[in-house]
Image (tube, rainbow, N blue to C red; front, side, top):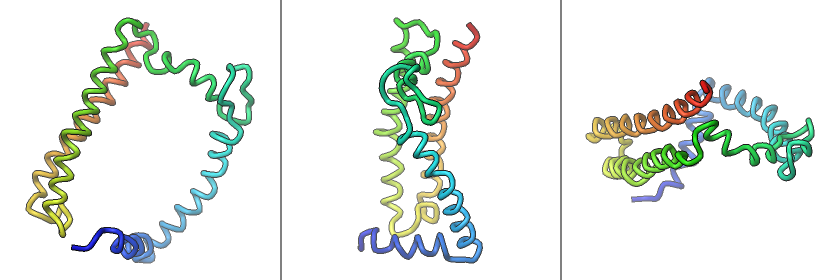
Amino acid sequence: MTAGPPRLLPALRAGLFGTRANTLITLATLLVLSQVVPPLLRWAVLDATFTGNAGACTREGACWAFVAAKLRFILFAFYPPDLQWRPVLVMLLLTLAQHFGIQPILQQLKDQAMPQDVMQSLFKDRFAAWHGVSSVVYLIESLLGLALVAKQGLR
């Protein structure tokens, strides 16, 4: 069996420039990115303030010093400091379950399906089910974070 990289270039060429529509979408995306990324990079990195306090910040760039100073409030709002370990622990456990439990199963199903795409193989249903479980875990993590922020906003 050959390694993946030699097949990568033809697959990219076919996906990005395989049809007229793909070529137009690719070129439009590159145009938009060329207009958006440089100013964003300038604001986020080149003109940004990384140290000091909020008073040291300029209007030209991001104020990462303020974000660093207020990070605990951004993450937990008014959640009691002595209980902040709870949401952190739940999110950490969900992340560990995702990384060490669900993702290896998905990768194993992909490997077993080779050389076919997993969605064209006999493992399609199992992969879809585990992908759904993965999505639900991510959704729960997101909702817990949202609930934490919303709950604190009501106080």
